[in-house]
Length: 425
Image (tube, rainbow, N blue to C red; front, side):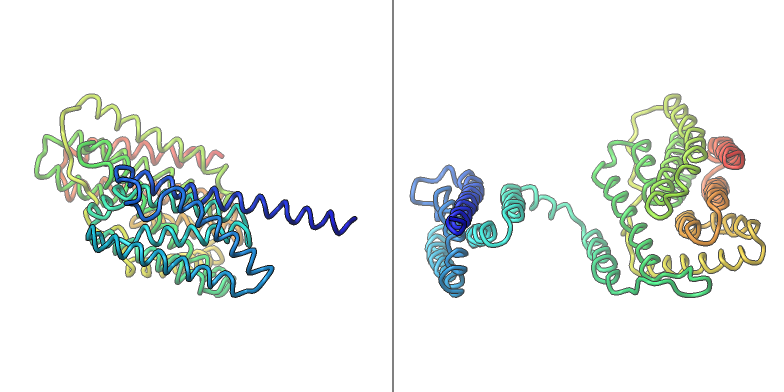
């Protein structure tokens, strides 16, 4: 009686799995049939019925391979592939259509049916849905290829190289003085910065120039507010009448840089986040409000050139940043041991002139091991304040005095308010 019950349950489970295999084939068949819906019956190589049956056949092949012989699945798959090749070859000769997407989709349908029966129905369903989406979005995918530039493709491939190839190869263990150097974690921080810059670049790229200085400044802050400041300073020098609008864009970019600090802290040093929220929020408000005031007062129909015209990711830059992160961590550990908190603040001020990423990530990491969270928070706020004040100098030297006047007071107010609130916490 017990064996009979076990056999019944086994048969019932396989019945459900075969049903899933049939439905997954029908799903892909519906998409394929919709694409070829204008053709007459019999002109399509494979439609809804064929794909549904091929999915069911894949499930049956998996059962036969398990119950009869392991050769059942490869032999049936080979037979399906040969039949499909012959059919698609005949269609190619008639229509001169050399695409093999339909052929690959049919073979995948067979595999999904087998996957649903022999491995996991949820995995098979997920793969089938993704396949149907890819098949259904042919025009959109090809359109993206036409819009994609060579430097953007190169950036994407380099991002994949440093993330999915290099990162897993690095040792995940503490090294160096005080154990502050972890190759895996340092490189992961590099990948994090590169990814955020990459996303920020495409936010500006896809938004288009028609959104103007306000939109560009807001989203360029995700990538590089310093690069935007330099670009707008040069533009203000060419056309001083645009200085108020360009100042609004710079202030927005600098304000957008601040939430990125919270993101870094949340990912690397979550213990810092509660203490950083108030100073960063205060700094952001004192930058966003003057920017919106300038925008409302000097609004005009204007289309801005995109400031981010270069490749957002360079492998050499990533390597230099990794070295900088390691140096900042080592220097932070040394200054902490020699000068205490004063050494951390000195390091923050100097590092903030050039870059906020490295010191933010380094102090967030050190806050987990060797320095107090409050000290790390003060150092990060100090670095952000120094970086924003440096941009006032940048606009004065690369732009004009009018542009500097528009951003000087908000930048100074932001630095004082941020540091004061951080000190009082």
